[in-house]
Image (cartoon, rainbow, N blue to C red; front, top):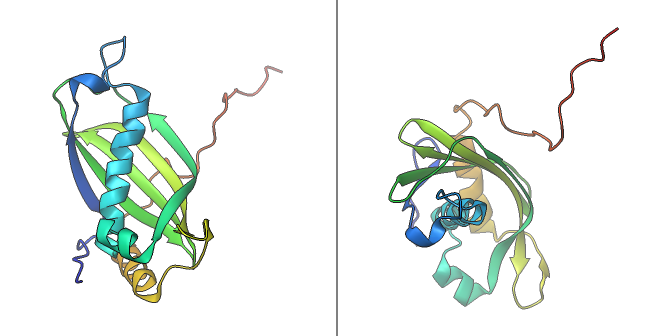
Length: 165
């Protein structure tokens, strides 16, 4: 199967905020930010060769090891969201992914995810198949010209100023 890698290496997915995605504050619930980012990851994986057919036939996929989300703005009912997903780094088994969620020009949220190649039968990690690894490398190379986002590598915590002297 031939996969088309975007020129800049970033896969863009579109989603619309549905009524069931809203919480008691009448905006998109945090769980649906994660679900929407996951749609972007699924589309990225399909571009580099891990689509539903591959998963069913090869019994290989990826699983998340860690994720970090920042929330910048609200998403509301009916809004169209664009999720850009890219590969920041990778090795023989893992990918470090970065995503941004936009409504038009407004940044709504970011997510970083560390994923690992996973054998669904053995229930353990294993290296990416050579063809998949080559596609990941090509996507990574394609997006190297895109600046590294300022949000990458942030940690959760309360930022405190210097104590007064």
